[in-house]
Image 1: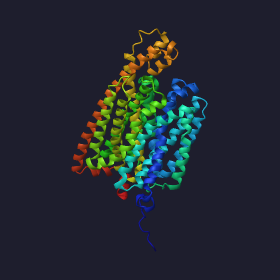
Image 2 (image 1 turned 45 degrees about the horizontal axis):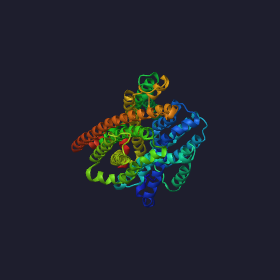
Image 3 (image 1 turned 90 degrees about the horizontal axis):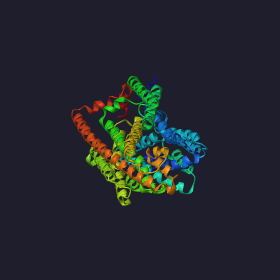
Image 4 (image 1 turned 180 degrees about the vertical axis):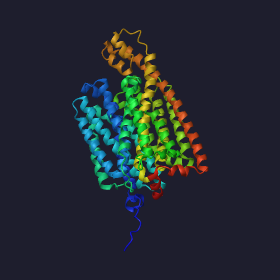
Length: 538
């Protein structure tokens, strides 16, 4: 009678010679997939005015063209990451590309705002499958000594893609209809799908950890409701029935999620991960940095187009120094983190971000572009050496088998931080604009006066209906918004410096905990099943 030997543990992908030899090529494919998703978010903002005119979209419909994507994307990230870990990250990536491509086609061919909103929701589902899969595959195919550099490249393309999106959309709008900004995704999807199918290896959790349906449902409801409330809060009011109800649903669902994950033998998100300071600090840095940057981008687009009179393409090109800084400097951030330590580098990056925002806090409507270009370059530099090490810290603090969930946490904190930044920093600017814009000397009908006093976009719409183009109104609105923009940037400076201080304090405590021998306990204390799996993987 023969006894069965111990189960064979599959060789890690990064030890396969065939995969090792093409790892940098595969990194390029993953980055292309990532840029596709990121550009679709940032590039859409440039096309919104054209979409509004062509589709006759209301202000609410225009907002939901953006929000439908964000709500589904953020709400499904954790579930999509867990699905990739369980069934295969390559399969998740391929499925996401197909869904994203179909949504892009449907959106480009939409004949009314409702169809476009539905298509954007479908694109959000596809993006949720794509984004975590790219980072988790990179984590699996690169050996530990090269992993942080590969992740830094990934982070650089994430930031660069966000800055390049408006340029691509602006260029397309110069010669084509608004649908081209969505249809351009299709050839990229096809090329990426073929490359992934032909060259990318399958990667999954070898333990075949069961799915967590209850956790998945609660995370979807909780995160989607939270994102919805954050987005709608500044417009409808935080105490409105709609927003307050969404917040209540979010709190109940997320509290239920925490309870379920604590009791589950195979939790989708092992809560013990947050006891590991690298994971927690990395998540904090991602949230804080994108809180500041998304709030800045939201206002900078309006400043460039409305206050300075740039076209969509000119506004996109104005941010090019930031994109170049992201792509050029992010890959080098890994070496800085290896030499000086990730916490110091992340804190330094946040201080550099604060410096760039400081330049932006002294702008006028007539500030020469070289000053703007310098500020964008400084901001790109700061974000480059902040986001990449933070993502590396998150991914390095979990077993490779949980790379999909860790990647999803990285992406979720990015989306939550960004949504909060737009809501909070945007509210600061909106409040400042409404309190400083002075229309008393202008002869405007009551309705036009009220509209122009609400936002600079509305002021431009009103000016277009006035004799002579409403030059006086445009000047007053541009001056008031610029003052509001600079105030918001000063607030962001304080937030960035405060976030840097938190990172340094937390890292010092982490060092003390490690010296005391507590860190190892935190790493393996994930869940009954996860602790056993962590030992097996090690």
